[in-house]
Image 1: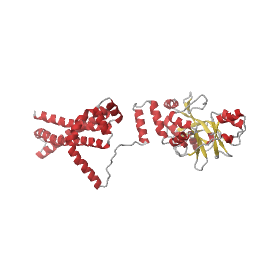
Image 2 (image 1 turned 45 degrees about the vertical axis):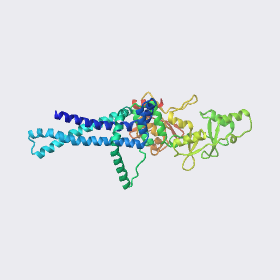
Image 3 (image 1 turned 180 degrees about the horizontal axis):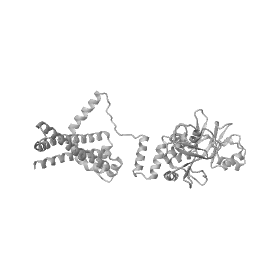
Image 4 (image 1 turned 135 degrees about the vertical axis):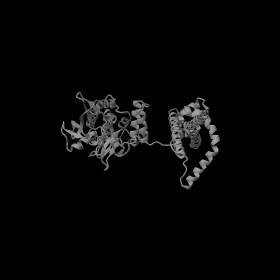
Length: 444
C-alpha cells in the first residue's frame, strides 16, 4: 500500500504541474477577439480573462502565478519522489549485487531522476502545452477558477519575487518593460501567411491576396513600372487628329506629353478632353487640357506610390531614374494588379504572361518580373542586375539577339521567340508538367 500512495502523490504533483502549464499557455495564446465574443454572450469567466489578456500588468501577474505553481510542484515532486522512490528501489538494487552501498544509492538516485524527468517533461510539460495551444480559450476558461484561488495563495510570493526581480534589474541598469506585446514585421507576417496557406487555414485566394499585399509593402516601383521603351507618349507639337488616332489605336485613355524628348514630360492628356475639344470645334490648344502628373523616384516603395495616387486623385505617375530622366511610368491599375492580379476589360488585348504550347514549351512574356518567374516556375534566376526576364536574357547574351537564339542560364535553356525593336518580347523554355500547371494557376 505504501508504494501505491507514493505513486498517487507523484501523479497528483505531475497533474498540478500540468495544470499550471496549461493555464499559462492557454491564457497567453487566447485571442482577445474570441474572448470578447464569449463575454458578449454572457460568459463571465471570459470577461475576467479578457481583462487579463488586454492588460500587460495583469497578464504578467497571471503568468507569474502559473510560474510559481510550476516551480513549487516541480520542487516538491523532486524532493518527495527522490526520497520515496529511492527507498523502494534501493533494496532491489542491493539484492542483485551492484556493489557498495554508495554505488547502490547513486544508481538509485539516477534511476529515480530519469524516471521522474521523463514523466514530468512528457505529462507535465509537453502534452499540456500542445493541448493548451490547440484549445486556448476553452482551457483558459476551464482553469480560470482555480487560478483565481492560486493567485490569492501565491500573492505574497509573487510580490517578493517581482520586487526582487525589479530591484535586480535596476541594479543592472535595465529598465523594466511596461509592454511585452510582440509587433510582427511585414516579413514575419509574410511567413505567418505562407504557413497558414500551406496548412489549409487560408483559402488559396485569401492566401494569394494577403501574400500580394505584404509583398507590395516591400517592392519598389521600379519592379512593376512600364519601362520607357514601352511607354506610349506624344510630343507637345502633335496635332489633335494625330493624337486622337494614336489614342484610338491604343488600349489607353491617357497619354504623357513631352517637350522635345521623353525625359522632359510636361503632363498628361485625357482622351475625354480631346473629344470635348473636337466636338466643340473650338481653337483650344493641347496645353489648355494638359493635366499635371506626379514624378516619383524608381526606389519609391509601391505602397507609398499607391498612397500618393490615391490621396492626390492621380491615375498615373512618371518614374524617374537617378539622373532625373524618365525611367518609366506606373498607373493605378498596375498597382491594383499587384494585389488582385491581371485586371482585364473588354478592350484589353494584352499577351498573357505565360502560354503553354503543345510540345510542352512554356512561352514567357519578356517584361515579366524575374521574381515572378522564379516563384511560379520554382527557378533561381539571378535578380541582381535585371528586373525582367527579357532584360536578364539580353544581359546574358550580350548583344541584340536574333529570333530562335538560345542561351543557358543555370542549366536552363531559354529561346528568344519574339522581338520588339531591340527588346525581347517573348522567350520560351522546355518545362515540366508541374511548371505548366503552376503557370496556368497563376494566370487564373
